[in-house]
Image (tube, rainbow, N blue to C red; front, side, top):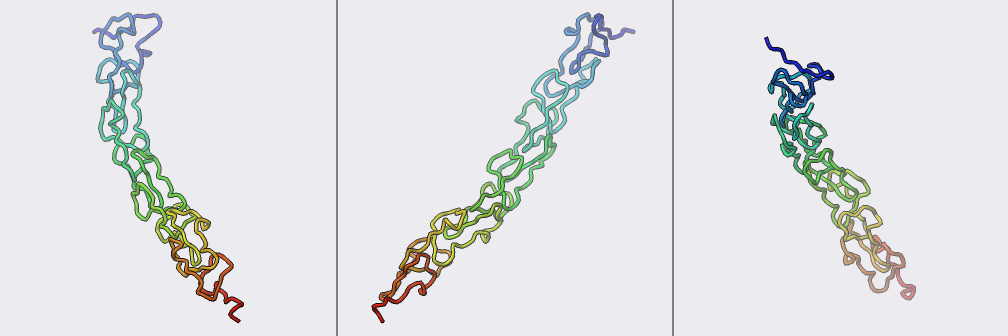
Length: 231
């Protein structure tokens, strides 16, 4: 019987180069005797004597190089259902509005972003919380919606338009996605507004003839006083 031998004073069969295999007997050079495992495979053990010892990369991984001891996990935000992948593009990216925190996922592990969050690009590993002045009222959002004019929100992660607060009477705002009550402008002195969600200065009504107002932000006609000349 022939025996597989490495005739070198420095290498034995036990420490034959890992991630490769040898098929010939009597080789005196380890480099000549060992053949690198092909792309899409790996070999973690020494002493392999056949190509079959090079293991196929499992689903969720890939290997673009020869002679490797392990395959590379697909990154977070992706998955791979194939075996023996040789390119990273076999890792399928999670679509916008979804995410995956797993490495080396073997199936579609992409989850929908929850309400109040979003992912705006493919391959997200986490969803982003909606910023102040915005909201997301559905799962799987790729963007958040700005609070409408006349409203604002100082909180993050809003899940409904009702989380946007009205500017209130005596104020107005044309700004979309306002983040503070300071974005709401008071009606000028001599005017008032009873509207809770006013979007324009045109909603500010002037004090009637014979009355005047000295303070901005009048909420109703009580902000208008009779002129002393009328007494």
